[in-house]
Image (tube, rainbow, N blue to C red; front, side, top):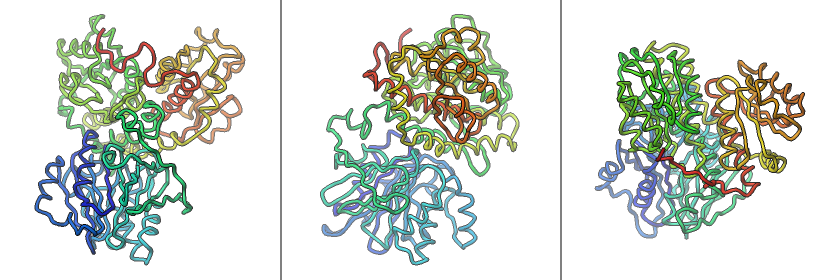
Length: 618
């Protein structure tokens, strides 16, 4: 949820940057800062808490102003803590020891520990606890070797692993911003003005000033001056990126470069997952923090069972969470539909926790189930995306999805964000019950790599359009999965039904021969989650059975799996991933299949018939 804003031009920089950051406040943050380039050095202002604290600190500063013909350049940031607690010391921008380079950054530098050790060995001192600070010291290292600012930035960025967005300024090259995008966890847009240029992590920050926007693509680096921007690919060649003219109406403006909100929200999942992780894991120790749960270790020790209550896509997320809470935390977990839970006189009580999952926080059936749990004396938690909602207010403790506004009726980024929230919860409960162990530390540290894995699954591909062209006329689909990915079969089928109006069924793959196998013929596409995990051999057997009946197999499989390519008709590859996190990756191809089939069939993707975003009545 971090916000980035940059400006270069001949107007006063500080008000433009602060105004842009205010328009990104909806994304949430715990500290803010600004860096302004002067004639030979950079002035930094940073403050913990709200932007009002930063503006109060800057009230008496004269560094933001210059003569009317003087170039102004600066960057600003609002931060959710990832590495290091929320504080002024850890707030962005970060600056080198000479005070000549500053950086703001969204995302996670996966290899920051290794880089930090190298830089320590070269005499660099670190002021903050963040991963971001390694970036500015890397740039400084290359500048000291005689490289230009641009080449130093490129050399530093090439060493970073992970998905992120970066903006740099240098007093040695004033009037120039350098921006880079790695993966999909952090977007970067460049706004084109009249003799001035803007940079932002999200368009609302600059729509007051310009509607002409360039969106950076994965591994782009832009050199931005008041007269324009030059964008380079990772190999140093110039990239010609389209200029998008954003419509004046708010709805079109929010869609930006995307055709539909659902498409936009699918591609925001890297950022949403980064934001939901942010500030909750110490990636050096693996410690997970959840202050908003309002629970003590003794409370955790007393929990004998967890019930998850949810509806629709959130219920499928809860089924994934059951595997995590039992497999990582060792707590027996049940999942109930919110619409059914209270009608069966559930056996819940004071030694149990009930977790409600709801994107809107206002889902009527889920709220009723949560009230039932409260009345029976259970500990009540919620995972919600809409802060201040009823599900947050009525719970004893809550976890924010931090997915950002989800406008498309068919949930995408809230689904994967809530899975990550449950994974974090499982790690947290395990650590509270059993202390820090190597096992739980490894589970938590694995999250640092997840946003970049998501970015790989979101890379451009014509495969989904090709599948849509082949199968848009089919009336039925079957989805199969096993283990932690069997709920993904349910979710994939639901997505297809919701937006393309194709009948689809999702099943645990082992249940196929208990009925659904009768449906399989030469016109039946069967989507199989067949990644290389503990049930891989079982899934290969199911695929063989589908092929024996002339079914069409679309396999979601692990990169480099040659066997699956011999057996399946179509293969969508995802990178290797720890088993408990694999549903985040397997969900995305299913979302993209549903989206492109709906598009090919001419359906209303964002507002499918008969459906509402939030079901607030029974």
